[in-house]
Image (cartoon, rainbow, N blue to C red; front, side):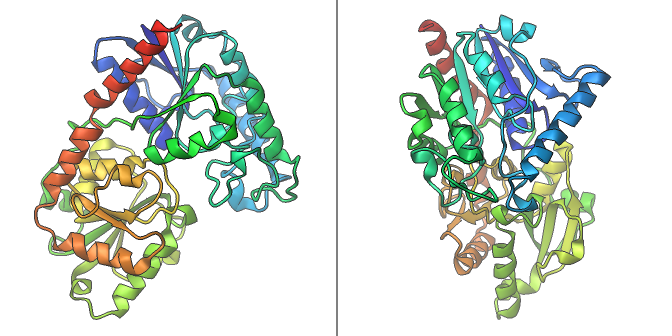
Length: 419
């Protein structure tokens, strides 16, 4: 059985990381052959193939992406929404690609940033192959937004979109919803990475009649593992005798990642008489344009954005806890990575995060947007002495490569048996 995974990127972003980890996990089973088709690859990894495989194609890919974003600039409310909404207008034909033709199953992941348009998605559907679509966010069942926030118009039909400058009933989001409606068939199996996203997807009018499942992303627990804390701290030049709190975000001040809530919580701790504040310091992993704008009040160390897995593992091992105050998230890879290294997580009880953290067993789920409870969670985790093993046990039982790969293999076998 030949499985083709399709994703815009190979290594950039959470969906890319998840898709490539699934590729590796599937091929380790020796029960099938899996390949990954991306717009443009970043490594020379086995089983990874790129569509833009010449200098000319790479240049076209770049200008296509720019053109799509320029097009959306006429519609966006502000620059902040530029990457929160994808139009699906431009893309690259892939239906005649040899890997697509040879595949028994097409497993489509995140295809935005002008990799596949609605038109190209429709061409793949018309090949009459079994199709699996993994939902890394909400885009596949909305009119264009990746996370809808409090809006639930996708339950009927999109339109009057808050991400658009001039929202109305037949706006760009409505047209996007109709474009998807025209190409979707009830033969598509949608797989959400979390139970939360699966439940939300089932309420969308676009997916009525489709099978929607929840299967998590896998992680290699031989890579993400517990290491010596002192050695890890030395690698980053971090103090040995401090309590270190980690914050991770591709963009540190991203509102959806809850930066301002962590900032507010740390301000309260700094102004309080809490005993733990005397020993607390912060570690930030991610891109920070202006460090002076990051207000965490305690001494703060910046690692920049890390890409090498072993260095990332060392960072998780160097700290005492990871605080992830996301306001809306599917199944963040970073939380699973941290727990696989034995580092507990404090996060808001929202989205797919409860699939990862078992409250007061291997981490702490704070009440949504409640900075006082976020502080309580930080204090609770710091007081624990034997929580590390619980973190590792949860990852091994729910997210290890063998467990997740076997779930997908069973799904693939069901689809090929019925085709």
